[in-house]
Length: 405
Ligand code: GLA
Image 1 (tube, rainbow, N blue to C red):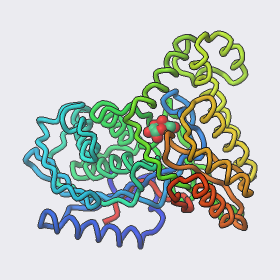
Image 2: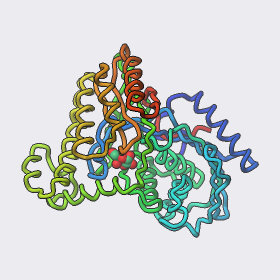
Image 3: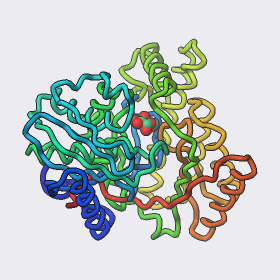
Image 4: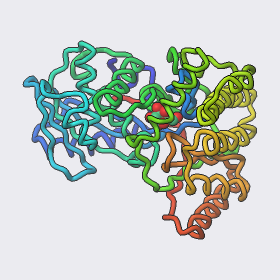
């Protein structure tokens, strides 16, 4: 795709975009000498509801954060990819495109360079003629916090390579290519939610996405106008999806779908849940299935409430989603549970972990008037339990990936 935003809107702040782009361009010049051909930005995300449903062909509802990853890039014609991160003082990583192998040395190293390299590999694996590039990367998306810093890096890289090579891909194609890179080059079996969120979200909206066919609806999500806020609480417990637990959950869901004779758990209707559960012998698979089917239902319920103009009423749906992720899907952790319990006890409307789990972040829906009290209550609960101090900020839905400089 060309232009500055495609279907993604122009983001949360053109001034901020311009300042960030100028900084990234300066960083590029310091590393490589000449000016870049352009700067592209892609956001991290939080997911409002619909967790661990995307690899079951289900529904999700993420919103983009104002935090972005910026890629300042210039085309090269010699088949060499050079990568430099402004955050990680690791020097320039130089790769020869013809030697990039899936799960080879670059992917296996598991470091940040695998993600942009995987995007380039995936583009070529899809038959696109892509030359080399010099990339300088800067990001404000917290790493390892379950806020999709990896997807932001992938999508910003893909937007840059798309334009540098005049490919004119759609944001959906870009999301698919990025996910393929992460699955097959880096070797992490994620679904498509994070890449779609980063590529397709628009400012002021949550993205209602059907992950089976990628049909989308931008749902207005202006909490401030209703006297509400969505807080993000980063527990600072490192979340690493590369570990086996995510893949295990995914395999368990696939086993459940196979046992029930459906293509994916999305095809188990909520009304037929009890009957489906009765047909499953393995108690662990039964719990996974129950989570996915009820979670898809919670996405529908959330949409219904938002469409009815009743955002306060989604609070209990969020909290029910957390209980399901904690008890049935078993992907929470004591710190995430502490956020949810202490926030709700202090008067929040609802709260849940967001993203893959095993650490990372939670979201909390609060009335303006109690936001501060809730934040303080969560921090005190963390201190009392001897956990690291959490990082709390407000999520205002930002724009999707775009050219910024
Ligand atoms: C991670 C993955 C997503 C999704 C979530 C859980 O963020 O990258 O694809 O599966 O976990 O909803």
